[in-house]
Structures are given as structure tokens and as C-alpha cells.
Length: 153
Image (cartoon, rainbow, N blue to C red):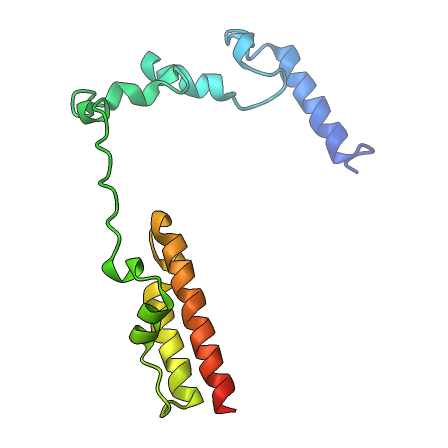
């Protein structure tokens, strides 16, 4: 409290006194809030060009639209992906030949073969049109490796 008034009340009294003196009588009241000592954004924008005041359009003045002529051209479609040769071999005999499972394989070597085969043939790693073939190959490889593991036990 300052002389029986709170700080807020004393500030209000001072602002009211400033308004009554008419110091701001020459300034346009449209751009200022009564009692507020600073101007609003309208006062800041007085020195800015008219083009920059067009909200959302100001950056168009700085673009070189002729340089962007390539944007109006139709995009060229990407060539269709070509299926790798190994994905066309989906018979159990073909997959067994690639895995080359033998009686000498251990669980560790079979696990390594499974990982190596999956690295090349997993459906998530091939283009969308070839995922069915990759899925068939992975199913066959897993079946053959699981069968070999069962025989080892």
C-alpha cells in the first residue's frame, strides 16, 4: 500500500490523470488503448509496405514465378519395379536348393541360414507387387528349417 492505496490503485489513478491532461489528444485514438502507454501492432505496421501488410500474400512478391515453371509440368511416372529373379522361384524344391540344408548342419548354422535367407527375401524388404512371392518363399524356408531343427533333436 502506498499512502493508503494499493500499487494497482495508484497506477490507475496516475493513468486516469494522464488521460485527463490531454497529452495524447493529437494521437489517433483508433490505434491506441486508452491508458495504455505503448502502441499496438497497428502502430508498428505504419512504416511497412502495403504489400507486406497483405497477410498470407507478402511472400509472393519475392518469388520468381518463372523459375518455378517446372512445377506446372506433369510429373513423370516412376518406372514399374522389376521383380528380382530369385523371387520368381517359389517351389519347395527351389527354396530347398537355395538353403542347401544338409545333415551336417547344426542349430546354429540353420539359424544363420534362416537369417541370411530372410535378409534377401523378407516381404517387408521387397516392392509391394512382389510381396506375395516373398511371403511364399519365407514360409517355405521357415518350414524347411523348422523341419531340419526337429530332426536334429
